[in-house]
Length: 608
Image (cartoon, rainbow, N blue to C red; front, side, top):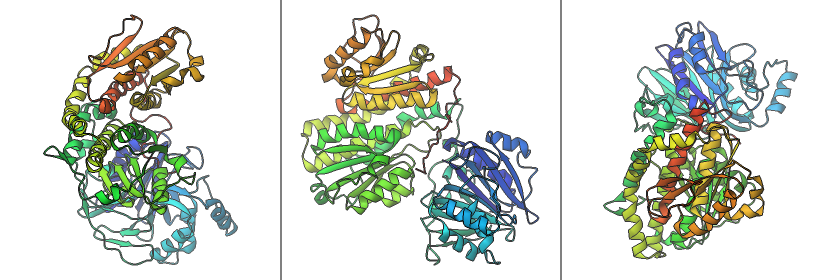
């Protein structure tokens, strides 16, 4: 959600800001703007259209002079998308410009106090109180004004601030929202995501909650929440800018679908050395692991669906009860957790607000926290006791594909590793899994090589009003993700149901011509799923069945089949999901949807 960029240096600020915002488009936004300081006044350009409009309005940045500036992509929370509500926001005296990600929870109280003091507001946003507070507290000392302002704010924020009286100083502040400093040559940068920085520098500093940074072209000063100078380590980004480019594909989503064999392979290799699974120097020791009597998997969206697969895998291998729960529900229900609970928090970005809050809640109750994330140095990674990184690389499309696939791999590896220690699975079963895992990437490649077949199938779905997915066991967990992929980028109503629940009300939705996708990868439950297929078929449903090779053939000509390579029963999710990522893509393509940036959605949900 939302994006921040900031620049102080010797070159054109507008050029960096526009290019940086373009790199952050994938996060989701409905307006955008930049502010650049030139001759002690701010030059502003805003739009409620795409970033390309800002390029046009500014002649690619050439019409806006100055070497200090901030930019923002906004995803509306307080107030509708409009030029008035878009960032940057200015103080009444036009000395301060501010961009903000997050939510200021006490803004209404602050706003009324400021109105009583004579300040005038032009937007509906919570953000606008910030430049007004800066003006109120500014007496010539910027650091003092920033410190006083931050003390008044309640909620979450990442801030970029510039002041007309300080033509080289870029200020960044963070509380519960991601913000990163880029250390360049003759310039220093700020962004909410490394994708905006990597074409300029690979040297970054991750701000911690409560820290404030003052940057000039030649210096970086960082202060902690107590005002003391903080010594920060510079991290090096380990991927190239080409990872965040389309590389000849029409959409990032297709590029990322096609990258999955390599990403899965990299994830496997990072934790599997010479056939032995090693999770590095994690604090979850054998002694601690043997005391665990319950596992809580907490996540949102697709990460939650990966956790749903993980529940079946971990319970089978570890014989420990596993609960998978949406983070937004977990954090508010006073969960029953103690020091014998392992809490696994899954998040692609590592910044998901509800997941981070759930992590903190579980940690407060004494649970050991294991994070599964993709972004090094992210808030969830830093807050957890242990972290297992997926090796997906940057994922730009809003609808996750390779992020989900690599999360599955990490959960498999965790299950096999822990089962080896606990002795809860027989050696033959674990060896079979270990032998099969390295074959998963090439089997994914096989599915991808037949994507034209799935493109043909997509024609049958493009005009549907509702599509239903059914499955049992891991098939049901995968159906949740398959359904989400379709609805989020094609805008077609889609639901996933446990096949055994059809008779309990859901089958009333089936009528003549309704598309039903039946996932049949779980071989031992084929007969049960087949009976459900016959039930919906008898009511006129058009059925597409997804079946592992060599399992069984449908004799009914009315049932179309979609095959994926056979694999170990516990690993079917890694293959079964791939056709439905492709199906969602091709349906959305046929319907003319904005595939990489679907409406109303954001890549990283950093506010509740």
